[in-house]
Image: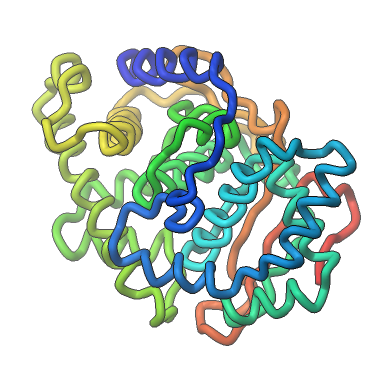
Length: 324
């Protein structure tokens, strides 16, 4: 696990010195979607996006000093990526309070927001608070790791990704999830990943969900083979040539999570403990709430069918609800 942490620490130290540059026009249009099967989803969002209320939201938030004009487009981009993830995943956290502020103000334009949700999602995307008291550190770690996994499979991380979302690479996937993955292969593994992470019966996104599941399964298999060969030190420093760039981060996450399955169990979390951090492999804590908000976007009721609503919740809203 040392090598994974060392890899991410070096990258994150470099990013700490960066500021947000101007957002490239191409990235604004494509959202940095890596999978060809995801282009229809991005196009669907762009077609549903209404520039007039979006500009009004920007004016409101920049006028109040919440987000500067220079940085605003980056936070709007991350909100759009969040909406895309919410369209296909069972549960989607959001880890930035400024992106959440844009979402809150969008909801204030009730008709425009309802129209956007209907055109993009087929139903309202609701927003309600999360009760963190019901989350353990282990569940928060898995939730964050799943987020990083699917985010990195779908999108090209840009220079501002970790400045906005917080550092990647400090959380592990759940032990039971990894044990299930370890015992499967081929199409069975792909189907398990698809069933565990993604929504069901969303026919308009089936190709994307299958493509993402297949790619994750490929990296799971590669990680499993490395663990079985016991070549941890050499392999983690020199991943396969195909695991370059962003694929390397996905491979390291899966490799480290699978390796942790076979380590001696540490003290278990209390079920009543609030989950605000993940432990990195060097003992450092990744604190989800250090300066960000935390939301959960998941299906409510029977929302695995395209006509039902999605429900998203936010811990930064306080005790009351924020829904429409």
